[in-house]
Amino acid sequence: MTDLALDTTTRGWAGGEIARGCPDCGEISLVPRHPAPAATLICPRCDRALERSGARGVEAGLALNAAALILMAPACLMPLLSTTALGATRVSRLIGLTGVMWRDRQPWLGLALGLFLVVFPIVRLGLLTAVLGRLRLARLAPGRSPRRSAPAWLGPAFRLAQALGPWAMVDVFLVALMIAYSRLATTISVGLGAGGYALAGVGLLMLLARAALDPAAVWEAIAPAADPGRLGPGALDCDACGEVQVPSRPGAACVRCGAHLHRRRPAALRRAAALSLAGLLLYIPANLYPIATLPIGLTPTRYTILQGVKDLMTAGFDGLALIVFTASFLIPCGKLLGLGWCTVSVLTRSRFALKSRSRLYTAIDEIGRWSMIDPFVIGAFVPVMQYNDFIYGRAEPAATAFTAVVVTTMLAARLFDPRRMWDAAGRVRETKA
Ligand SMILES: [Zn+2]
Ligand SMILES: [Zn+2]
Image (tube, rainbow, N blue to C red; front, side):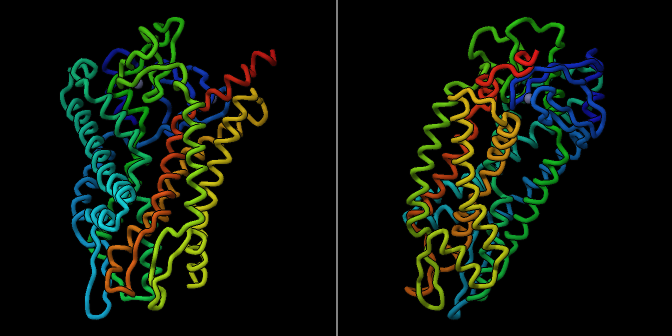
């Protein structure tokens, strides 16, 4: 943070305030351009924390992301899990999960595993390493104006990296790997391979990188926010990078990150409602039909999600059962109910519990990805349970339906615009005055 601040002060924009839009309620307020370390900026209208400063800056973020990117190679290519039975050994690799699911005639589940665990993490880490590396290089050349020398790809690249954040699910898969390992260990000889350890390293580095990096400070280093004194009427904030600007026309591109500018996300309510409804409909087969087959004793047994939870409890893993029950049952239910409530409250122009609803929306948006635990558990155990007609594991069609529930509800939460709830309720402060 302080390193980046030094960077921006060289451009004659030292100190002062910048305009910042609240993603929850849409209020545009003035905040310090360089907040004090460890300061939390609060939205004056809805009390949302707009920004927490105090991150370590470019160097730490760059080092952690680059290290995670390098570790992705062994994590993808080396064995994740290995099992031994009947004198034979079976090994799984992250890079091979898509192919295993493809052969099992679950191509969509295979595609989800490939994208969420290999493609998106690598693309995100690669983009972050490139953006932070370029910013680091720009700082090594004193006297050059970073705004002029900053290449045009920096903004769109950082926007894409940020957008991929929730979809790069290494952390979720690590929990799934722990569950698969614990469950398999009760019936078969199982070992964690070098790829598993490398992936745990990637997960830890990504966690640290997230903590080390302050996105607002990176945006400020890519291109400093405009002086609020220069903003005229019609100013709005970019949904992706937060830059407050006056667009030349509706839907024009953001000057900093290239995202399309809209006062509110277009057709937010209709799109979110359609996707939530699709999620609700898919949720029924996802729970009624088996998601996987796993040998118990020597009998291949087909499981639904709740039978899987029961099996974990029977095997003595009450904690893991609680994790799976929360991720696979409570979170999707809560998401669908919460999104439904948010949507109805816009239609009825409700003012009831506006702030709580905004916090609920943020929670729904952030927690949704953890529902992928169950499909990931299947992805982790199927490749190492291929022995004979009795000892085998297989994903069943409801696993694809469940994955579709997670994806549609995550997209619904992304497309819904919480600012609509505040628009619909009217400006609270004006009505009080
Ligand atoms: Zn707010
Ligand atoms: Zn932008």
